[in-house]
Length: 220
Length: 252
Image (cartoon, each protein chain N blue to C red):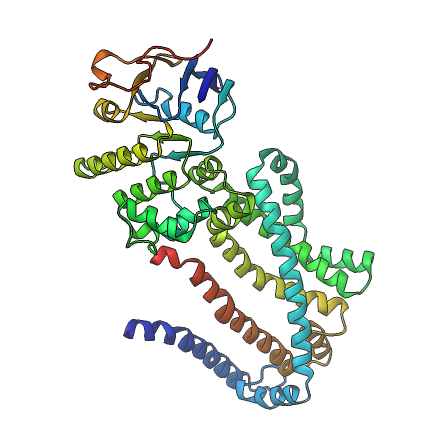
């Protein structure tokens, strides 16, 4: 169980995030929508443990993974090494299998610079899932991809999430992506930004499993 | 293919041009005492090589260069990395860096000899102290240029300190380390020569000092050029291949 209870986050004198609370069960996927620059990435960085300069608290498992907006790979290491350096316990065979799963089975020895952006994104996805994370954080993982590649990535992500069922929180601009992946959709907005139930049009169309739908979740 | 051959031929032709200029100057001077022609150095060079003096003194200088290089690079890299990453530390140490960067090499050498005595410890310490601030300031720039995205990635995935240094930080610093090493070696061997000139009884600097007093321009050139040849070999056989290897991913 992941519990986020942020009371506020400021950069200098500018308060970016207000009171932001939510909880997430294992296997549950939460999508956060919101306009550019509202603080979505900031929120994710806090949840991921990258940014610890905020007031409030976040309770999250140690085994977490993040898919960044940029692939954020080690350009000087091969695709295979990019998995094995980040996950030292991963055997070479397991790393190979993971690469094959994301369609990079024959590119294990390639440096990231030799891969297309779509392939780099898939490698970054493989890296996230290779550690069998309990918490998966994704920051606009399908942005700046052409429609076909984005669709391919979306299906791949759906499959991988379905297989390992981590608690997932992801940020996106696209209500369609949110509807497809998420059990629950929330909206980050305002100044300072707070979470609210997503407008009706952003809600997933299909039934969303056991998760409570919309609204603030978590304790005060 | 011809481009490759050409790129190899250019440095050789360029050096041949330098020797030609020297030969012409020697012919014009027409005084072997003042400026011997290149071919007039062959015999004294062979003599020094045969009696072992050249190799001994080259070896001593090379050993001092290596010691000072290793010390200056290790301390400079660590200090530069720390100062680039920790703004508080940088605020405190930056004025020191400016002081040491501007302290003339000669002053450091003389003070080390005065305080420690005319020993190799003093010599190597003096050279290292001259070089550390330079390496530090180069590596500080490198540390400031580290990719915050990769930092965040390493943090989320909990990459261990050692793996982070080896696979995330050092590859980013490699061009800075290579640059500092390059200019470092060139600077260090020049300072080592001064150190030997002033207070050692072995090494290329000592020999140059001796032949300077004997006004033997030929032998001064023999020693200086031999050491330049050694440093060119270090550059071509060690530094450049290493640099090519760490840059492999860029051109791949």
